[in-house]
Amino acid sequence: MTISNPFDTDWLDIQKQLTGCSIRQGNDKQIYLVANRSDFNFDASSAIIEPHKNGLYRIVTLLTPAASSNVLLPTSELSWYKAASTFANQFETCKSWRETLKLEIDGDRREQQFVALKLSKNFPNYERMWNLLVVPASERISTYPHPPHVSIRLSNSVSADVARLCQYHYSVAASLVHAKNHLNRATDCDFQDFFVHLMNCCERVQLFLFAWLVAVEKSHTWSDLTNDKKKFRKEEWREETLSQAFSSYKSQMDDFRKAHTQAKTARNILVHGPELPEFGNDPETAKQLRIQYIHQYYEWFEAFGLKETKVTSLFNDSKKEMRQNLTKVLDSVNFLWGALYLSLEDKLKANTFSWHNQSDMQSETSGNLTDV
Image 1 (tube, helix red, strand yellow):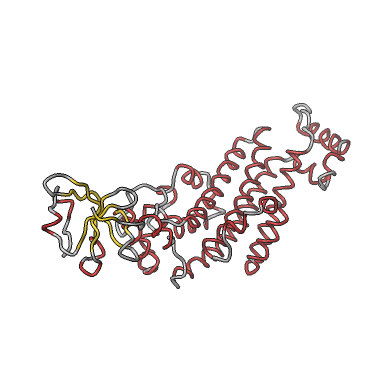
Image 2 (cartoon, one colour):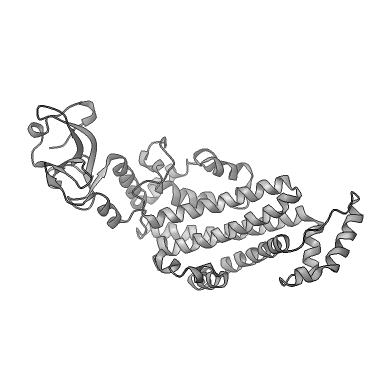
């Protein structure tokens, strides 16, 4: 026997209308109606209920066993769980629905800025990865096959590893939005802040790649990677570790490393070098004076292994340098994201990637149930 449209009825006499079930209280103090899986549909096998009077219990939320009769999921999480499973198991079927979602409409405020600032022109694979990885991890997909109309937050059923991966994916875009805003203003302060955010983007790309190894490749655990804090903070260790782990993406990693190094060089010049004084309003005179000044105090920059010609170029055409650095980072990360997208797509088609962790779901709601 199944519950048919339970929310059409305010009160149900559980004892009379259902058989093969028991009313129990979980460790969370919630009252559960626990049904035998063989007697009920997947959609309505149990429910969170609340005692009323005269032996009546109100159905508050439907639940269902996910992997065993002891695992219960709230309705909202069940909807997500089923939709995410459908998405993975019927990948091509879901594709047309997935492609109706657009970052400029269905993303959050910062992601919409990402599109408005035309960052997607050089980095279109950000939206493709968002569509493939983040949308199914969020509550948007719980309405499949209907248009999404719920919160864009991540589902509670998403594993911690996948949630971390989605967060770093979003963080890469946020850093690029901040950098582009500084480029568009291009005052003296924005010049320095632009490169700080661009470097922050590159560091978040590295964190995304580490999270990818954990959530997608499952070749590492996050604690294994980060337990040794001193080692993890060393850029040389991070670069070497990622280079080895992503050796099959050598071209993409080499491009990103070059863009990262160029941005880091500019950031070091601006953050660690001396501040150049104002040299008047005449552009050509100011240019020549800056060259002389840089040459005179070059040892400041040389300590960081920076070439004098690079320093001169950076200060004499700052907006051009900003645009070139941004384009290099965008192009290299887009190249890398494209390869990772294809890898994730293959894993979804082969059903070797999941957004949830079965053991996580069991630990959330199973516990000991005691008869009421």
